[in-house]
Image (cartoon, rainbow, N blue to C red; front, top):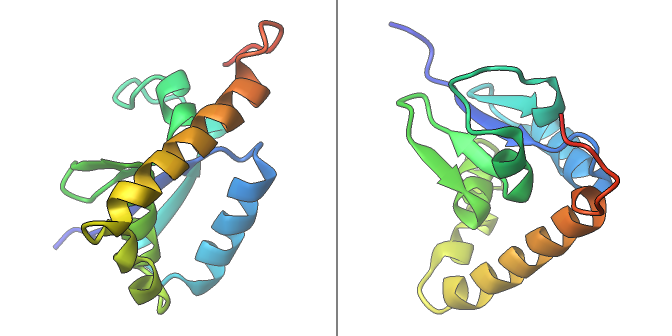
Amino acid sequence: MAPRYDTLFYDGQCPLCAREVRTLRRLQTGQLLLADIHGQRNQTLPDRETLLRRLHLMTWTGEWFTGLHATVRAWSHTPLGFLFKPLLWPGVYQLAAPVYARWADRRYERKYACGECKIG
């Protein structure tokens, strides 16, 4: 049987993202691959700008998760996964999703949408 790995695509040039990935790498149980977006040149992936705007995770079956869903799925590969599941609870998700979206939008705009920066 083929290995069943999920793949988390992250921005290795983002200090906060890189720190979280270092923690995930240390704690994960072996079923999570961590892929820096800046090292990826695969035509089957979404374009780089899309990947940079939100956290993306592709499951071993090819299903995609983004944003908080990607975060919760990635952390489910660690002993601390139970701490992240409440982010998807009704009520909590309705509060947390817009906060994440605003943070992700601001992070992208500050780092990549300055007009001088080039993606790729």
